[in-house]
Each structure stands twice: as structure tokens, then as C-alpha cells.
Amino acid sequence: MSVALVTGSGGLIGSEAARHFAGIGLDVVGIDNDMRRQFFGEEASTAWNVRRLGSELGSAYTHHDLDIRDRDGLSKIFERYGRNVAVVIHTAAQPSHDWALRDPFTDFDVNAVGTLNLLQNVREHCIEAPFIHCSTNKVYGDRPNGLPLVELSTRWEIEPGHPYEQGITEDMSIDACLHSVFGASKVAADVMVQEYGRYFGMRTACFRGGTLTGPAHSATELHGFLAYVMRCNMERRTYKIFGYGGKMVRDAIHSHDVVGAFEAFFRDPRSAAIYNLGGGRYSNTSHLEAFALAEQISGIEMITEYQEANRVGDHQWWIGSNAAFQRDYPDWKQVYDVPMILKEIYEANVDKWTSP
Image (cartoon, rainbow, N blue to C red; front, side, top):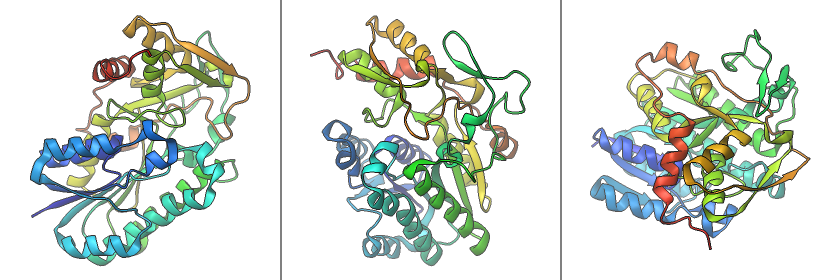
């Protein structure tokens, strides 16, 4: 028996990873205690996704309602499966800047200490298993906001000819900048994953994601950009825009393309790898551009409210470069761009997200 152990298995990337690795023949052990519901309320609950995994995957999926802060509980799971664990895919996290500010202890305990708990269990019980960590581009703090930007009609863009014109690479420093409390906890986790790779020779990868998205997102205001744009449009909610004229830019990568990258690393792992992973130049959008696409897809006009102040540590422009990962894994290819992503989100939720 070969096991893929997936934390945050009810979430966007976790559920996609569970289905994907079951599809290539692994038994999947999912760990998820629906803490997203505690973070963001009932509409953000991932319970529906866990039920769907059980229905779709049957005996190939075993679920554990466990908090990754529970060291004893994690140890029992790792002791049970031992060296049958072929890969660990760590997607569980507290993902919001705003929420972290309200409760920094929980944010750090989940993001940093929870990651350490998993790493140590892998070291003790299945040290050969690749450890795939969902990090974030927020480890770069607000340093991207120091890039020379030009204001266009619907977006900010980097100055033509800049070294990062085709996307920000992993050589951008994470030091001496503002991260937000959430960003700092994710830095701690990111560095610890690297350290277990270098210090203990484990096969680890930090995937510093841009906007990760797809129809399995339990979209809510504080987390889930494109899915929340589509949800607001379809349910006639007011979407609050925070600063930068609504022209802030995000690259967006579909969960399908993310887990394809995970599989590539699983099949040919390295130690202490660091990769930016996002939509890149292939798939990116500003808020204004996303609103226009949502209106085009649904035929419904967006309702928006502008607030002048941007969120602390928020990126004005982020387009990451996937070049480092593509050099190491040249067979990996992106499939989805932003219009495809929004259309799929719409079609997956057209009977669920309706106007009151």
C-alpha cells in the first residue's frame, strides 16, 4: 500500500490533490478538521468537499478529523502508516492577513508550528517521502510594491524592460520588508521546510503560490479572490475593493495545474527546493478586469464598493515566474487561464450561487 497523506484535504488544493493522487493509484489519507469554518464562517466550511471525496473515492480515501496542532494525534496517524507514506502534501493553513491580525497565536500555531509537527513526523516515520508544502508569495512581504509600476487603464504593470517583466523570480529577498502577521507565520513555515530538506536530507519543496483557485474553493470575502468575485456577481453581493484603484494585479493558477506540479515533484523529488508557482504571464488579471470577465460570463452586473486604504502588506502587482520549476520539470504545462477559470467556477456553482 502506498499512501498520499494530504493535510487540508477538504480545501481547494487539498481536495484536488486527494482526487489526483488517488487517480494515479495511491490510497489517500486526508487530514482536515474544517477549521476554515471557524476562521470565516459557515459559508466557508469545507465539510461538503470532504463528503464529496468520500463519495467519489470510496475506500481509496480515509478521513481524519484532526487538527495539525495535535502532536499526539498526528503521531498516531504517522505511526499507523509508517513507511507506506509515499508523499505528504501539506495544504492546511490559516490563509488570511485580516484573520491573523485578530488572533496571531492561532495563526502562528497553525501555519508555523503545525508545519513543524508534520515535518518531524515525516522525519521519524517516513523520511524518504517527499514533503510538498503549499507556501505563498506573501513570504516576499510587500517588497514587490517597491517595483517600478506604470498605471494603465485597467491595471498596474511593471515598467517595460525590468528584469521581472516576465515574472518575479525566487531571487527576490524576503528580508527587511513588511509581511503582515500571516506572511510572517508563512515565512517561518517556509524556512523550516527548507531546513528539514538541507539539515536532514529530506526531499522537500516550498511552492510559493500566487492566487490558487478553482471551482472547489469555499469562497469567502477574506480568502478566495476569483471564486469570491464570481460568487458576489452571481449572488448580487457587494464586492469591497481595497485600494490601488481596483487595478491591483494577481496571477491565478487553477488547482488542476497546481497538483500537476505536485505530481512532477513527487516523481522526481529534490531537497530544499523553492519554486514560485502561479499563473505567470499566462494567467493573470486585475480586479477591474476580473469584474468585466465575470459580467461577461454571467450577464449580471457587478456591485462594488471602493475603500481607499489597501490591506496591510497586500501586493499592488504580482506576476510570478514559473521558469525555475519549468527548468527542473519541463514536461509540466499550464492548462487554465483566467477566463477558463472564471467560466468553470460559474458553471460549477450556477445552481448554488443564486441571487436572493
